[in-house]
Length: 272
Image (cartoon, rainbow, N blue to C red; front, top):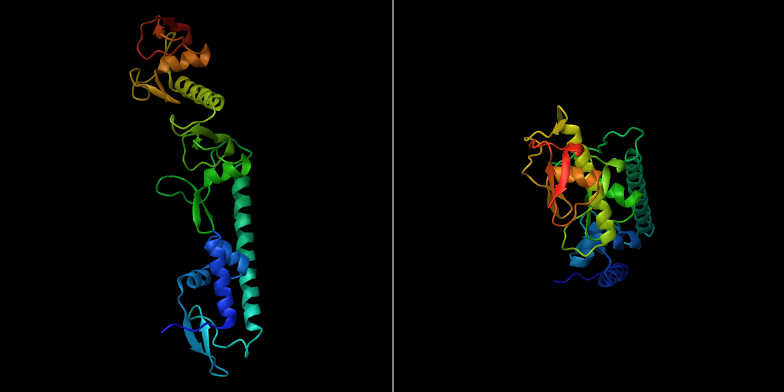
């Protein structure tokens, strides 16, 4: 048997359904009408209950079983009071969320250049930040609030290779795929950053053997190519391009010392 709605409740249901047809989400409808998301969801699903008023005994149509048992004639101020309390809770939630966001952004710009983590990382090692009912990666939230939106075809990666770090100085943009149509100038600039970053890591882990600088095979094998943008190149070529510039087409990087794994710039030369 269908439940007959009161005029006030029927008007609210019609207003909620009208906003839903316009494309608004349940949280947006709840914020606009001063209702809870559970009540909005119940309005949209058409689930209703009838409870008698404790004063006059009139059946009152309510959206959930926790609603008050007094009708509008016996308690005219109850509805406005409930809406006021709901608005205060929403304002308190928004204030706490803004405080957490301010703390996150302040932690993203530390005085020291060390890595910074936020909260407890997930099982993948990423720091998380909760926005409403969404759980986002903290480093993406930091980038979007301090540097702007992330362009299509790019992702935020860590220079320090630590997924949980939110230090803005340790973050950079990198193309997600070569098949995405993105700005070539920006792609080239990002590839140069990756190239110099890999060259610095190679120089840091290289060991001195006379005049040579040998890279440990367990870290960077001479036959294992390194990924720089969309290219797969050897460590010797990484050092050459970071030091002298791009390698001409058809040329290869060779070593005068004939020592496998040497990345000393003075021992490198080009040969076709």
